[in-house]
Length: 173
Image (cartoon, rainbow, N blue to C red; front, top):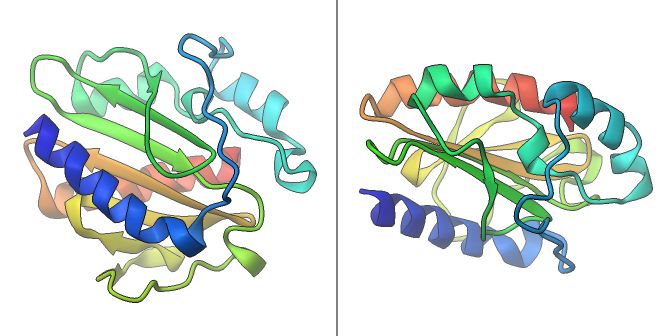
């Protein structure tokens, strides 16, 4: 399940890469996390969208926000994927996971994401687009972002959880 989920996420992300993400990517080094979760994310990213700097996706969610969704997890680690910063939280026993991808400045011009040719999506609340594999794509300021929730519940439960996370993430990016 883990490999299938990751493969699906990567395929969808790559399909969006051509026009949805900044061509310059900078993924934080492993262990390069600011402690303190949300407070640190707010402090270090307050001007990021305007200044064009990278947002550290691993600082955007606190442990108390991820653990109720997937159970025990690795605390969030930078991972590969499309976007300026990608972070994944994974439960090693169940392979349930949450992945956050933050695109570069200007990847969602005017705060809008656009449909990509050949990529099937469904509309969700507040401008969210649901892609296959449990991916919710959304604009945060002028950044094209994604969150993927993978649990045993799947389907509507994962989408509902993703919508809640999008609300948190938009306020922090």
